[in-house]
Length: 514
Image (cartoon, rainbow, N blue to C red; front, side):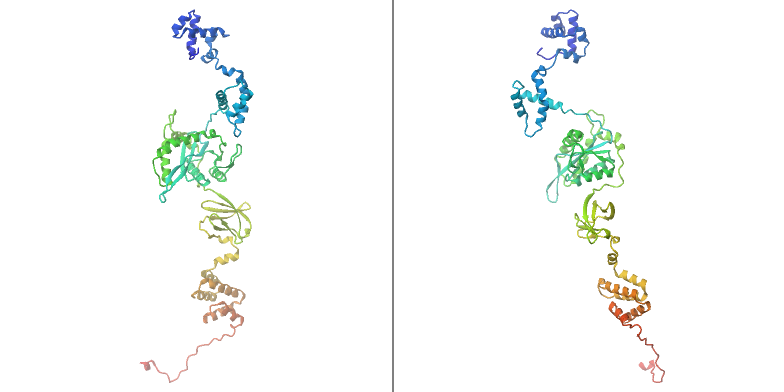
């Protein structure tokens, strides 16, 4: 019986013929097997504790177990000894520098009659495989989105320099339908990762209940089997889209086997098909990737009567959470102290933003995005600005300044002329003539402030006369008006009345001049 075991259906016929009283030679002739084979099986039947009628009732696998007990090596004493040491061997293999060769040498030294090196490695490998069984994961529609970066890059050529720019490839898939998304980004930085994930969610047209990223730095600050630390930017994105982040376990690729498989498919269905094409911008590269991924999603799946896109559109897309009205912008967090000029400096742009002056010297939390800057103190937002990228400039809200600084910013010829008009007509005329001079306006602002102060502390009629004197004498300055009032010159002013000439005969008419 050293040859291949016979089918159990044929063995059952052998037993039935034996029950009918057929000879071994006749049974061998009828079944087309050797007489020695017949003799061997009948001998095993005699050694069995079961009668032929009971053997015939057994299912084929059970019957085969009666005639072929399996490899006798698994019943040897050395195998029983080996099993007691398996846990120790597997634990030691995880230690630095420990190999199977080293473990075998130690094993043979303590148990000389044990297995040879090849048999030792074979049995140890079998135990390693048995110790890591794979579970079948059942996925609900619109439940999770698996996220990863491909290990290999794609590239484009910079037309201005001729440099080849390598790009990372972001890959994501919905495990229920196996629907795939891929795009190239410049790096695996937080900004590029969040941008690619946002593009993916917008492409799907909705949000799954959970995002399952690999333990890359852009997603997970600190990996942990139980409570990984999620990057703040990814947490903000999840809050914006109403989803949650559940990172895959570190060094457990089977947790995201589907996206790992998608990466392999992307290599063959995108990378391979684009290998001879040249691109001159990342936009052109992504258009080509999108075209190939679409073809991949529309390819009929093996052992399925549908493609990934059909499954996604039919069973999954309508279950995704609706997208928010506003697009997500990545948030950055900084701590700054409010300067004495009641501004904080956003160091990334070297630009200054105003804060209400009562918070001077306080520590502020600044949260900024690509387009906005928000400033918080004591858990309240005290300032909001549109982001500016002009270095060294100030973005100031007038209401954030104290009254003195607000007045300073308000100063202009129009401001002073309007203010003078509200006080008196004479002061208004004086200010108009003052600014009509060919002088730089800011040189005249202090003159205006002085005249306004004089108007507040002087009697109305007296100040009116002083202004009229200044206008008549074309002296449009603070000092002249102040001296008039100080020296009380408004009371001694002589008003000369024009008197007509007396009538007399010594007058020539107009005819004398022709």
